[in-house]
Structures are given as C-alpha cells and as structure tokens.
Length: 234
Image (cartoon, rainbow, N blue to C red):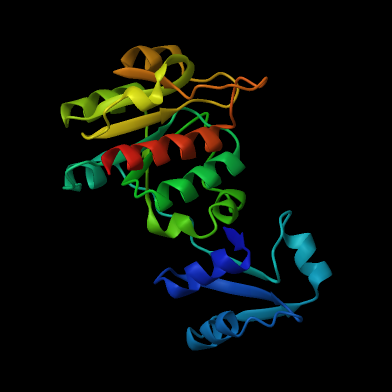
C-alpha cells in the first residue's frame, strides 16, 4: 500500500517496517527524512509535485512511501497478554469513514488505549487515508480484526471487561466508574450501535449536549470518552 505525508513517513522510516520504495518531491527539504532514506538505502524516485499529486488524492507533503500492508492481530495474540490493572479497549461497530477511523487511532494512542477492535466486513479497513489521518499513531497501537463483534464482546466479558456503548440515549458518561477493565464501543456514523451490540453492552452512555446539534462526530465522541476515562482513573 501507499502512505503519504511527512509525519506518517517519518514514523515509518524510524520503525523496522519494510519500505519498498519512496517517491519524493524535487522540492522536499526535510533533511531528517532525506537522511533516513539514505541511511536505510531505500530506492528513491524523485518527481515533480504534479506527478506526486496524480499518485494520491490526499496532501502528500512531498513524500509517498510504498510499504507492506499494516499488520493486524487476532484477539488471542493481544487481549490475554494485557497485564495492566485497568486495560482499555476501543471497539468500532462497523465504522465506515476512514477519517473517523484515523482520528480515533490518533486519540486512542494519545490516551493509552491497549488495542482497537474492528470487524472483518462492512467496515473501513486500514487505507492510506486512515494512516495519514492517524498522523503516524497507527505505528504505536495494535489493531485486532474479528469475525463477529458480539462474540468478541462475550469473550472480553470472560476476561473481566465491562462494555460501555456510546449513544445519545443512555446515562451520563461521567457517572460511570471506569476503574476496571473497560471496552468502549463506538457505533456506525449513521446507524449508531447495532441492536445486538447495544443489548450486549453493560452500560449505554451519552455525552450531555446543550446546543441545537444533538450528536457528535464519531471520532470527536471517542476522544471525549477517552479523555473522561483517563480523568476518572486519575
């Protein structure tokens, strides 16, 4: 896959990930990136900005890397190995917008989330846009792909997790004690939580709204919830 943007490229270049090829602008003056490309002996093709523009739809900032697809994990590879007192998992219930996914990855990494769980189908995957929007955070967080969200929730409960679904029809999110194993579920941008997922949650929590708009972007809501969990845990 192709990834682009200075921050994303820098994170990738500083990792041990395999990089097949780099395309850079003739005008690229970022010495740190240029030196890392030389140090790692990565095949580099120099192009005009107009040529780079044709290669990707987003803001490339003068660099595009060809890399291996991002590695995802299984439930068994990650969850049993988390030994923290208060683990925190984010579950995305069939999210579709890559910008939302990327922003949630960024917030999750910032607030110390241990893993993000996504379904295999009917959901946004790890695309160039997701990687770009995460601003490199995707390199530092584990993403778990599962066949069925509800079965995964039941398995999390067996490990002692409490499941908190996010929805406008619920209790005030600040009234929950998050000092335990928590998995927070973010619903689809248009449909919200699916019916079975909602029924499987231990809590349905809302962010009280005072304005004329009664809903928030999925990634904004996720960030607010994660911030409150962090505050609650001290």
